[in-house]
Every structure is written in structure tokens, then in C-alpha cells.
Amino acid sequence: MSDRIYTTTFTVPAGTAIASPFVQAVTLDDATLDVVDVVIPDGHVGLTGLAITWGGTQIMPYIQGTWVTGNNDEIHWAYGAEITAGGLVLRGYNTDLYAHSFLLRWHVSALGKGSPVVIESPQSAAAPAGDTFASVAALTG
Image 1 (cartoon, helix red, strand yellow):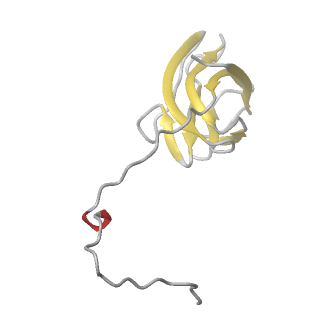
Image 2 (cartoon, rainbow, N blue to C red; image 1 turned 45 degrees about the vertical axis):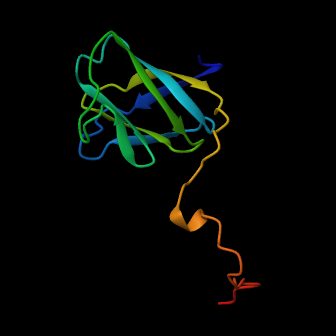
């Protein structure tokens, strides 16, 4: 369950071509992004598009180079993965004569404490008694 919500208004200028979308960074927290709500107000009428990237990879919509479009719509998208504070970027186009805004609500929760990682390896077995081991005191380069 999310423990906080952030909001973003993403306004895409009129005449922004698909080939050179408007870009805006989203600053949140190092956290788990549980859900993203995207509100597309009335008036967009399919003339605008939105894509969300994280770390340079498009995460919404899933297929690279596609766009979320609509008019008077609300999308509730469960993501459920970790993000970094400055990793999210919004990209948008707007072929209309007027600027249009998308409203986004980011539902996030604190990162959980990680479980210890156990790596099993043949090298981790106990050495037979009497074996000699060398150690490295310092590395220089």
C-alpha cells in the first residue's frame, strides 16, 4: 500500500511534433512506484500523446515509440517496481493549436528492507586443513 502521493501537471506546448517531443523530468524519491494515475482532460481529442520513461527506457505505454492518447479519460496503471529519485521523464507531443496538460498522480511507498542475499558457490566450501592461503594487503594501480 502506498504511503504518499505526488502530483505532476505536464503541459505540452501547442505544435509539438511527435518526432521531437516535449520532455520534462519528474523528481520523486528513491522508492517503489506502486501506481500511476494519468488524467487526460476533455479537449485533447487524440491530438496529444504521453509516454513515461524510467532510466531512458519507456515504461508506459509498454511498447517503445507508442503513446498514451485519449480525451476525458483516466488511466489507473499499477507498476509496482523500484524507481530512483531522478529517473522518471515524461515525453509528450501536441499537434493542436493550444497547449494541453496531462495530470499525473504518483502513488509511492518506501523501499522495503532487502532480504539478505546468500550466494552458494563451490569456492565457498571450507578449505581442507593444512592448505596455505595468500592474502592481498593492498592493491595499487
